[in-house]
Amino acid sequence: MTLSEFKKTIAEPRAAASLSPALRALWHDAKGDWDAAHSVAQDIDNETGAWIHAYLHRKEGDLGNAGYWYRRAHKPECRESLDAEWEQIATALLAEE
Image (cartoon, rainbow, N blue to C red; front, side, top):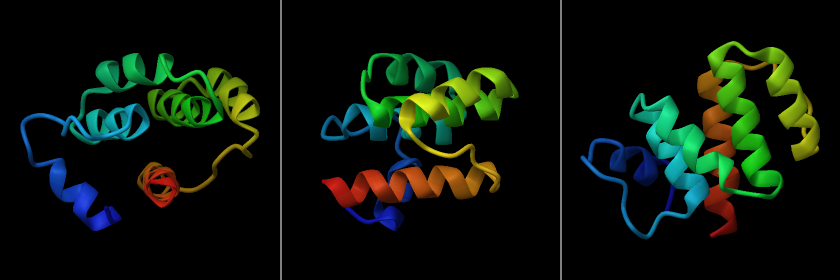
């Protein structure tokens, strides 16, 4: 799936069952459901989950907590726009599939 194709799924009422949990978290975030995105991200116990978690806490405005999650993800704290970071994460995840 390309980034463009993934973005098109955001118009759907439900996330596709075939989406990985990480992509599902980003899907919920793009739909404006931070709580659902965070809930999914909390259950991803690896660096990818930590990166999504960092992004979500940055979006929330909790920069201290975001910093903790960036460190767990072994990623530098993002200084780009939230939209740019979302796309960066989604692109990385889609490249792994």
